[in-house]
Structures are given as C-alpha cells and as structure tokens.
Length: 420
Image (cartoon, rainbow, N blue to C red):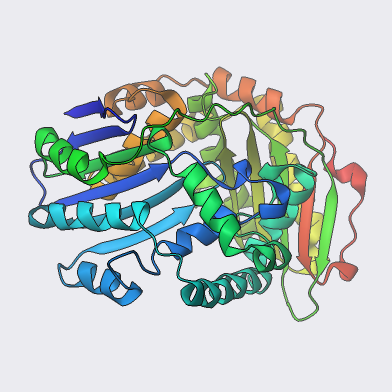
C-alpha cells in the first residue's frame, strides 16, 4: 500500500509497504538539480551533494561511512538535471539509524574549509574523468549545443572554471536557499509501516523551518540541430551521438514513445542493434535512449564505430528513423517491445530501491502515483498506429543534431544526411 503525508513544515513523505522483504530503501529527494543553477554556479548542486558526505556538526566523514558500514547498509547520492537524491538501503531493523544519518547529512553539514578544498579537487578529477570517457563526453557535447546557452544543456558536474570559482560562502548560501522542506520529498519502500516511518521522519526532519515551495518559471528550452566535434587522436573508435527533440515526461503518448524507443534501439533485438552490429558489424555498441524532463525531452542514438564507417552508420540510423515514420513497426516488433517493457517493470518492482525511486519520480513529475497495473495496461494497449504516429511527429521534417568524439578529422559528414 502506498501512503502520502505532508508534514506541518511542508515536507512530503511517501511510503510503500512490501511485507515480504527484509530491506527498506529510503531516499531524501530535493526538487533542485543542475538546470536550476545560474551559469556562474554551474555544478554547485553536484558539489554540495559531495560535501554533505564530508562531515556534519557531530560526525566526521569517516564516522558517516562507519555508521552505515556497521549496520551492513548502503548509502549514496546523485544529482540530475531536475533533482538531487540522497539514499540508503538497510535491513528493516536499522531504519531508525538510516533516517537519523540521512537527516544529519541533509540538515547539518559542516562545510569544513579543509574538507571543502579536498572535495573540490575530487570534483575536478571527476570532470577530468569525463574528458577521458568519450561516451560521457559526447553526451555533454551534444546537450551543450542542443540547448545553446541554457541551463538544461550545461554539464551536471559543472566545469573546471565554475567549480574552482565557488567560494564557501556561495556554497553555504545556495544550500540554505535550496534545502527547504517545501522542496524536499522523502520516499521509503520495503518492510515498513507508514506510521512508524512517519514518526521517525517527523522527529528527524520536523525541525526544518517551514518555507514556501519554490515556484520558479522554467521557459521551454530552445533547441538547435548543430554538429559538434571533439578531436581525440588517441581514440581508435569514433563515438557518435545523434539527437532529436522529443517530448516531456508527462507527454500523453509516452507509452507509445517507450515502445518506439525499445523497437528502435532499446534491446539486443532492436532495429539498430541488428542492422548496425549483427548484420554489418559496424559497431560494438549501438543503442537509443530517452531523456525526458518536465517541459522537454531528447531522443538519442549512440554508436561507437570506426571513423571510416561513420557515414554508413549515420545513414543506417536515418534509414531506420524514416522507416518507422513511414511504415510503423511490424506486429512482432510491437509484441516484443511490449513484453520487454512489462518484464522490465515487473522485475524492477522486486527491488525496494526501484520502488522507492518510482515513488519519488512519479510524485515529482505527475503529482500522483501510477500503479503498476495501470502502467502494464497502458503498455499493452499501445498500437502500431500509435507508435507510427509518434514516430512521424519525431522524425518527419526534422534535422538531427550530431556530436562526435575521436579522430573526427577522418570523418566525412554531409549535413544533408542528417535531414529527415
């Protein structure tokens, strides 16, 4: 059973009881991410996420790690474009310890100057690591040019310049302004009772000073179908990422969109995998993906290939996009995609961590809980005509954005080949 409760200070609690398991996953979600940052502070949400593990008013960084290790639990955090999450997974008997530790981290970080400077170097190393990870770098390149001059296109981790320029005062000010109860959602799933979890949360987070939920107006991002390259002569493979504007998270036809992405490049039996890898051997890795936000979306196709094969790979991708728009999926493709999506959903429901994340994301994006039955029914009802209709909206009369990393000087791309 899923229960929702709003505390007196504005914080929201969501729980789902799973009595047949022994674990509980708890997440503290903040409805703030990298797209809410000003350009000069790009990466500050991610930097703060790191710092919250480096000590509180009563615990050192080592004490935080020891507190979780001593109960056999797992704790971590991540920052995305639209939210930040701190989470723990523990045995049901250790839930009070996990709630206490998460509340200490989120409410009372020390921002110790020495630890801050040490962690700044860690973040800078993470930024350098992206430069050495072409599959990550190509995504940052694409989004930077696809959303030109806009927060949605900036890297989540920030840049070396912005991270070096952040002062302790700026970090503290941003933390105090962002981490308010009206913007915090706590989700928990596993062997728990709502009443017991509510008591723990009220005791741990009830002291947060009430504040209004931030109601920032986000303009729908402008997009540009640019071609951008980064030369990396040391790479043998050319890493390609093609991008097309898609639909926001709440798009009414999203289930047909999920099916379309699965057919296109979401599985080993997908069109792109079979055509580009299995039939022609042009790439080891090739797949499509969806990135959906509150007000927009991005469909991407990634391929790692040789520079001399890049033109052919792009031609084959465009060919499959056109085919889906013109003829739609085959009956057997539709059935495969539907069963794959339903199977993936049901397997995920066995994980307390997945259930916890699903609770939070549905509240953030839809303001309600969508049951697994509703999702399965909606996926099952998707028709070939609906998939083709979505494909036509996405792929007809559009220009494709392209990012490439590697020996790009050996790549020959005709811009006309990127027109649909």
